[in-house]
Amino acid sequence: MKAVIVDGEKKLSVIEKEMPIADGERVVIKVTAAGICGSDLHIWKSPQEFQRGLVMGHEFSGTVVDPGPLKDTLSIGDRVTALPLNPCGNCEPCKKGNINYCPSVWIESIGLDVRTPGSMAEYTSVRPDMVRKIPDGINDIEAAMIEPAAVALHAVNLANVGIGDKVLVIGTGIIGLLSAVMARIAGASYIAIIGRNTARNNKAIEMGDAEDVFSSKDTDLINKLIKSSNGGFDKVIDTAVSEDTLNTDIMAAVSGGKIVLVGVNYAKFPILSALIVGRELNIVGSIAYTSEEFDDCMALIEKGKIDLEKYASVPIKLEGAQEAFEKLSSGVNQDVKILIKP
Figure 1 (cartoon, rainbow, N blue to C red):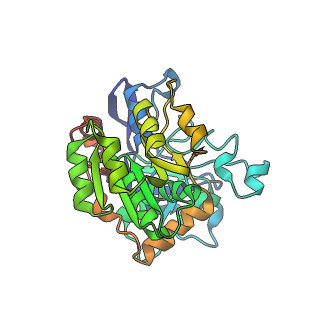
Figure 2: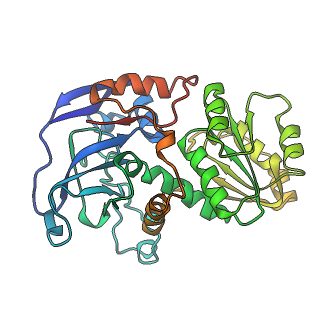
């Protein structure tokens, strides 16, 4: 089969690779659509040595080639998607339903571990309990975007967004835009988005998920945020996370407000701790989602509560992956979600 691998810093290659073996333990899937995620871009930009040869892709839809141990519930040709996670099932977080806290959840997770090739290939395989059959009301493109939608839903749930809340979202990528959507569903009365990419900001305005879209480059940003929200935001969801964005979060939040950090940043940087203390701000991290939240997203899409397809650009082939990664990392491209159709 054809597959895209990480072949060096900012370098992808299309190679011929053996397709997954039908071993009776995993579900073998022919990939229909695979999304490019921000974490894929991070790996592509600065791959570690152990990530060389990695087949990325953890957001996808496909059809069953071999149902493995699910012969009683899945048939060849069934449309499916899957949680790419690999929880142990035995630790306390797993027993409580918080599989995203499991210490081993990222070990051999689909598309993030060289031992478990992802969906940027013609075929992939998944542990059976993570597989979800796609309802008829959800198309293949939407199904491949359930995973990022679940990330956004988890962040909004952690923020405890409620009716009448004023919500600020940092980032105009897919997680940011979908966080705005989920906040609206949760009952937010006013939503603002901040982005640094002018083309993406214009796209965010076009999508209509927020009342206002601001540029992070605006020198009067904080004053405009406070004025537009009539005093500050109850909840802030930061999908970028940098020194600038985190301090913006802190200054824009109301006293007693909640800030949820979804973006990942390994750098150390100073923050306005006096404001955190003085305003009694609650800052929490957000990682992935629960199985229930993944399934909740499927239900929201099936009921027509979320239109995921509007965020997707025209799908590309495997051979176009390198160009797509370059576009998405350029900082000037308007594409929100590019999907690969092997």
